[in-house]
Amino acid sequence: MKRSPGARLCATAAIGALSLSLLTACSDDGSKDSADSKASASSSAPSSSGPAAKALTTAELEKLLLAQGELKGYKSASGDDTLPASKSSVKTDKPACDPLAWATAALAPGDTDANASNTVSEDKTSGATAQPEDIADAFDVDMTFVGLSSYDGDGAEKALKAVSDGVTACAGGYGLTAEGESTKVTKVVAEKGAAKGDETVSFAADVDMDGAGTATFHTQVVRKGNTVASFYTVNFAAMSKGGDMGAVPAAVVDAQVAKLK
Image 1 (cartoon, one colour):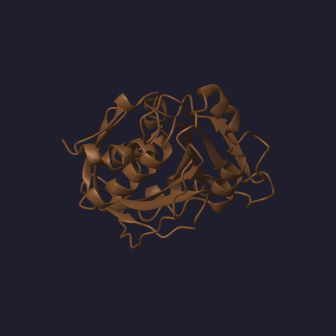
Image 2 (tube, rainbow, N blue to C red; image 1 turned 120 degrees about the horizontal axis):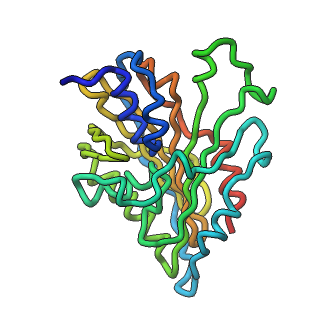
């Protein structure tokens, strides 16, 4: 049985690491999604954090996440209800692609248990952005999933390399299961983004909307010392209309990276 457009939107929301509770809130009135992503490669030169680097704890990372009121025009919220709790709930059919999927799910792209996450969304009622004029406009909001992870020794550099290698290895796409929903990523391309922190890897991924075209999502992964920050943005209005989700908001990346040690 072919899934409805709304179900396709819900499956794609799983790519954004939304929980089942949010997935079931998706409408069945979505429309076809289609987009072509064109991007070029970019990665700032890495600098070693040193073999003596010690990973921060999860509790310490949680204190480094953007908090409510720290970024004008945006709202920060806990990712407890909207993000997967572990890597076991986000799987691909190609091991080399796992770091890409984990980065989009605000999970650690490398080998560490120190991980914290939240969501940062546009606040259209704050006066810093345009006031929503109708229900459709209210859904035209960028929601960014932010993940922080920390590593001992050169683990952070290895995590960024795994993401960078994955962009190349997974250029032809991969199968993804997130929160029980299966979706096909049809193409991955490196993206030229602004250099942040000590090292940055950016990429765009085209996602099959169950045969009704593709939608394009963007991810940015930044290393600062032995801490890695991942950013993945979803816009539900763009998702329902089909097309490109838009770049990760620079203001969110800048503010979050500035808080890292």
